[in-house]
Image 1: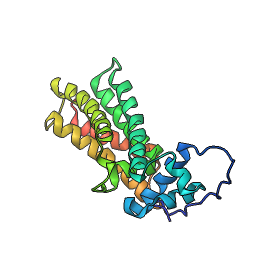
Image 2: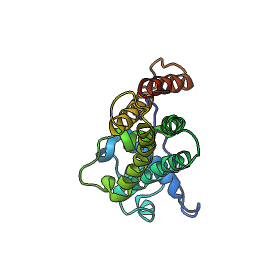
Image 3: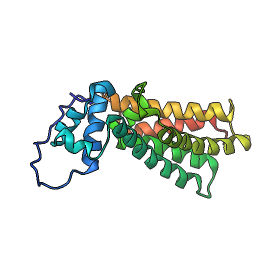
Image 4: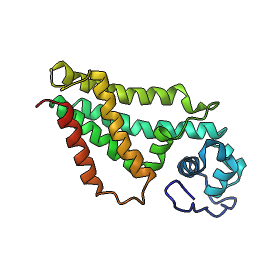
Length: 211
């Protein structure tokens, strides 16, 4: 069973000569297995079986499972980083940009629930490349871009309380809770997602920002 309560479907073993194995297939299969079984529970053999190839064929693309995990993290965070850069550069009010970035963050997480849980909700395996400098740097860049816009709001004297840092962190943590719960508890009777996002944004912005 996967984290979302659905059964993982394994591909049939690909016969020799059926073409090359795409890295995207490996990454997609590995992402599902990492979330469902954890890093330690995932093995190269399980990932290869899910894709439908031999372990030897998989090793032609990745040296080990930590390399697969690191690439999943990097690819996922790069999507959010690009969105944050685009929004932060818009010549519009800082509060509007903060709201847009928070919405983009939640929608990005909901678009990629397995990868999101893997990056932000799954405990980091101790002796792996998960905490590699590349993935860590991308995640820090995402946050710093967002926090920079919150500092613009603070510099204009528009925060009701707290510092720029505490406000940025509280906003980020609150939105994380929305995405994490929706991803982890899909069978709960949640309200419609667009409405949840809107209500969350209204509460956060109105609670922290002075018009």
